[in-house]
Length: 201
Image 1: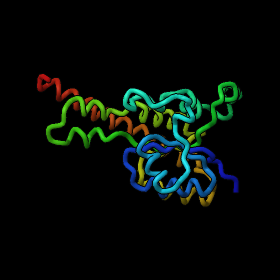
Image 2: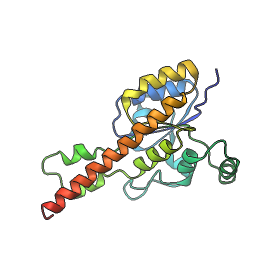
Image 3: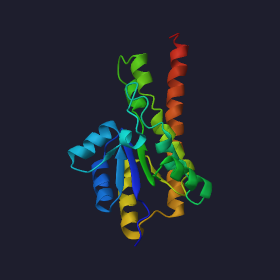
């Protein structure tokens, strides 16, 4: 059985089940790229992981506001593997494809639910790089599997064990879930700012 997933990017706010998934991916020979807290959790579990800055050649800057917004990441996610121009661009710019993206977003709703939370705290929990990666992977679902919900990890593991890949219906379903995830996230931010304005803040 040929394993289609060779490289995965894992960057999650909700760490539920991520170590188990990463261990499985490592065991089947998948290279894992990660950021910040997720990378630390995987390293603490003894799982080899490549730091995103080692992929981009650029450090995390501005208190982590800018880390994955880079062509080495987004080119790897968005490249259409059957498009010769895309493949040529990857080769020319040293971009390696990313086949699986596992991302869930900063806890904005949980943050604003805390008593006495400041606007500055709320604003810092607006995820930018996360939704960009989620939407890029969901757009390119024919070539990239996107998972935003930890409840999906076990079925992904089972599918990869059995088939070495996810079928197209599963890929499209996960893409739909991903766009729902980002749309609900943006709706929560919009509602928060609407409330702030209504209260004259």
